[in-house]
Length: 147
Image (cartoon, rainbow, N blue to C red; front, side, top):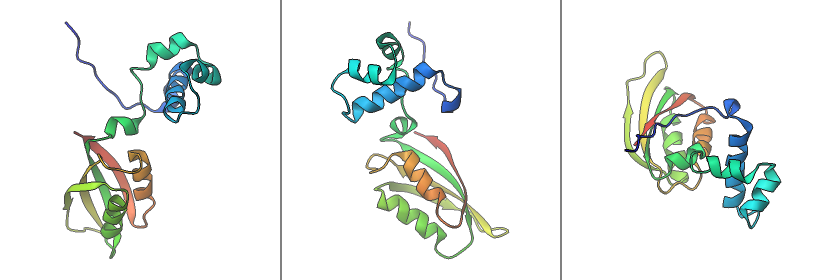
């Protein structure tokens, strides 16, 4: 009987070097920078056995969120156009907005929850979140979950 796999979001800073290098090898292969796995592991200074041990168990966060619905929690300043800029940024990157919920502004800020379908995003989810965080008036942004 197979056990159910549990998944965790873990900061890269605590990962062992072999796992970090495995992720980089997978990225090199995906970008077609080399022709073979041998070349990629050699380039990263990783043994083939370590690569094969970890390759099916590690992947970048954005791959886990591709073709999913993600829910974001935002705290937005109560200023004209802030929500509009957030929505336009999502649309510009081809995110499909599924739901928007915004509370009445209190003390100059409004809690907002947005669910986005990521299937057609032209950037990875991390890049989209970075762009949203840079919008003037976005005080906080957190990924609540994904389906």
